[in-house]
Image 1 (cartoon, helix red, strand yellow):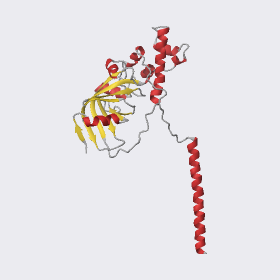
Image 2: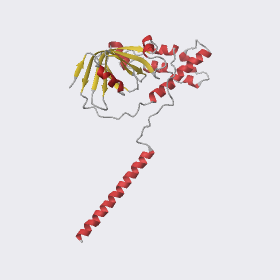
Image 3: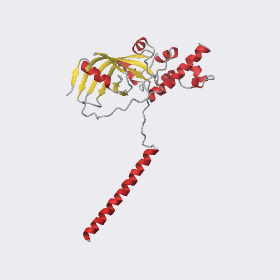
Image 4: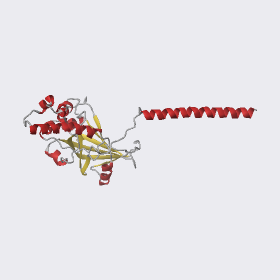
Length: 277
């Protein structure tokens, strides 16, 4: 049976911190606008400040819907589901505030030494209502590990930012960021897309044309992030259906099944013939 609360029960704090993923839902005010639901699955990115306020570290993506919607109207819902143990669905209804990369509040919540590669904002949510429900329809899953592609690629893109900063400091402090990328000089890394360029290309507006990132790109220019990515950390081993060894194994199983079936049919035929004789 569902229950509603005015704030987050303290008994749920620990459970929230143990969850490996959550979903964020937002929408524009325009009735014809796109309603957005985004899955978030990065370790240690969601934080409970107290029973009425939470925040999460928002990472760079191909879209910027959550930031655009929250900036326009503030409405936001966060949902957690239990994939192990007793069933539970938890929804946090709140009003969100966007703090972009480089802003004072962003720097307070996310110190440079703990920032995740690709981090573009901190979304702070003032919770006004909490809902829990049974969650019997949610299946059980085993968590293997978090994917590492996003931080790995983000760190590579931000390496361009750091190379540009080093180049400006050594050669021409007033050199234009975008001109450096276009020309590249003698460093091949300067000819690759930087995080600032990606934000300007992909994160300036929502699909409905609402403003996305406003100050983060310029902050990236004057304050390139330090690298916190552990390149020697564990990486997930994904099993692909097109793997050659898997195909060979499956073929062997099919052949074995065919031979076993033929032997069984032959034995049954001999046994039936013996009974008739």
